[in-house]
Length: 112
Image 1 (cartoon, rainbow, N blue to C red):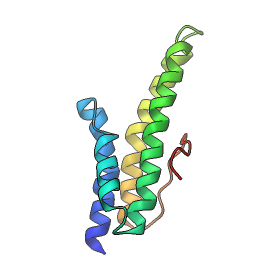
Image 2 (image 1 turned 45 degrees about the vertical axis):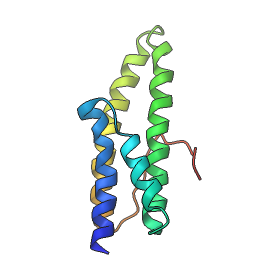
Image 3 (image 1 turned 90 degrees about the vertical axis):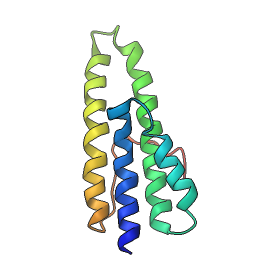
Image 4 (image 1 turned 60 degrees about the horizontal axis):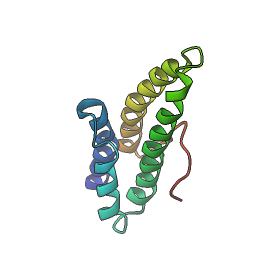
């Protein structure tokens, strides 16, 4: 069970690769989820949440691009999404380590 929690924490924290390297925040969790989803229901459940969150961030960032022309609202959106994209993977990694159910805000259901 401890190894499963460590893998869950690693999966949540792997989203931070986008903030560090500029890419990988969707690819690495997707690979972990796809390869381990049949072995553990928690990895399947939380992996779907992570993938949905990452895809939602991409969509929301794209929505913010034209909003830049509208009184700079897109810039505010970029700032908020940037904070959310760094803060919530860390919070949810801590929750996963404690055995709690993590949640992601601003997330659409692409994968059920």
